Every structure is written in structure tokens, then in C-alpha cells.
Image (tube, rainbow, N blue to C red; front, side, top):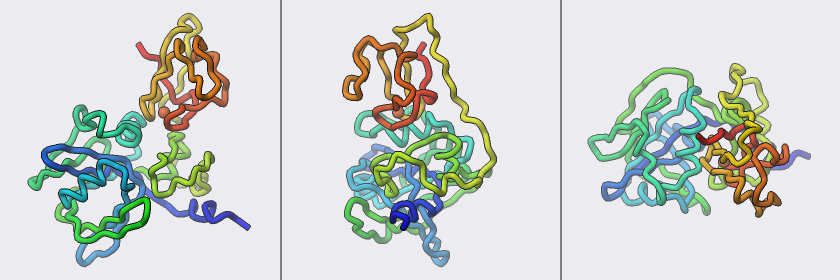
Length: 250
Ligand code: FE
């Protein structure tokens, strides 16, 4: 008998940047849980973890935006909005975006469409809040939207622990194995130069930096271990991607 999660993993999703604002501050985060719920009026539902800063901003402002990511979206953009906290950095500082007349930030880089919504209802879903929002503005940009399956299968992405679909499993959702998107090799493969054992490497997904001088003691990697000597099954301690998702730092 299949596990409940393995069945739920057959559900299909897209990948989005959900953003909001409060008191002049902007923040956004990656979400795969966005869907249209009615056409008349045009209304969407968005599930956001209650611990997220974006959740706090949506609660305060009653506004949210959804940037529908394109298949061309790089892992660096997904990592910035998916694994960095707006409590530590301004994610929009170096990200192309617009601000709506209502003051809501909307990321526009590598997006196929933009939506702005005004919250008209919400449902407490224990760890998450499901916000209902009436669409007040929408703009088509064009391109091929990123699916969650593509993110997993082609970009080797992982679910953040705050994602509605995160179950703690390390394997990709079964749905991700479906040939739903044209195969494109991951853009990033690194072969650590043997001449620089002290070189630090940065995770392309979450921006975690592996410093050989510090190692990764929490995961059994002692200080002084060059990146090239890390075990093949070592993964980023923040987001869980493999070594092939790291780049040498200059
Ligand atoms: Fe990472």
C-alpha cells in the first residue's frame, strides 16, 4: 500500500515568487502552492507558512503578488527567494521588480506572468495560512512556466522545510519523474580545481558557503577538508542539494 505522501506527491504544481509589503518593507518567497479557485470573480488561493516574513506582511497589508516563474529561472533566483530570509537581507535589492500602485512588490525577472491580489479571506491550516485573494491586476509576459516537477527533475531542486508539500522525505516526488518537460541539463557543474584545496564553494541554491577551514562538523566533515575531498553523498546542510550544485568562489 502506497504511503499517503507518495500519493500526494503525484499532485502537480508550479513555482512562484509570492511577495508582499508592510510599512514600506518588501519581501517575497518561493511557493509551489498557488492555484486559481474561481473565475468569477478571478480569485486565487496561496498557502504560506506562518513563520515566514511574507506571511506577516500579507497579514498586515492584505496584499500579495504572485510572479509565475519561467523555466529559465536560475537556481540563484530560486535560492535567494526560497532559502534566504527577508529578516536578514533585502531580497529585492538586486532583483528586478516593480511596485504596484498599492505598494506591493512584484518580481519580474524570469517570469511568465504577474498577478496582484487583495486578500478577501483566509483559512487557518495549522502550520500554514491559506489566503484567498481577488486578482486586482495581472500581466502576461510570456514563456514557458516552471513546473515543480521540472524544478526537481531538471534543476535538482529540493523542497524547503516550510513548503506545504514538504514531508521530510529526501527523494524527489514521484510526479517529478514524469517526462513532463523537455530535458535540459542543469546549468551548473563544477569540478573543483585540485590546485586550490583551500577554495570556498557556494551553494547555487541557498547561498550556503562551504569553507574548507571550517569543514562541516555537524555532518561529520572535519575542519581542513577541501571541497574536492567531501564524500560523494555529502549534501548542502541548508538546502540538501549535492556537490554539483556548488560553484567555486573567486
Ligand atoms: Fe544549499
